[in-house]
Length: 98
Image (cartoon, rainbow, N blue to C red; front, side, top):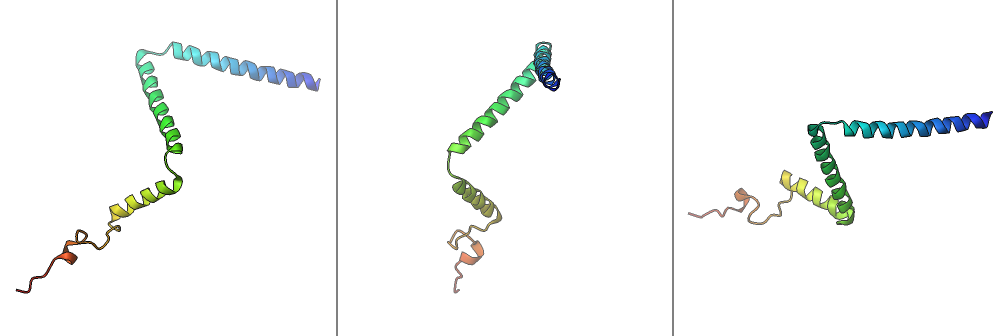
């Protein structure tokens, strides 16, 4: 008896999955042109995002990326100045003696 209940639950689960697939297919076949175009645009955007994430796995190591991000953040805050003539106009101006 216990085995029959397990099989009935398994078959019910398979039937539920099959019904969900059929319902989704029916829903897609009845959508309007606007809904189709919207879904297509969303799909292309998500496909592009997935492609960029996969490309990111192969391009460069984690350490170099982190260093580049930190450098950009420091650059935006003005911390990357090195003390050269182009850094601070007040500090690098030559005072004339007269």
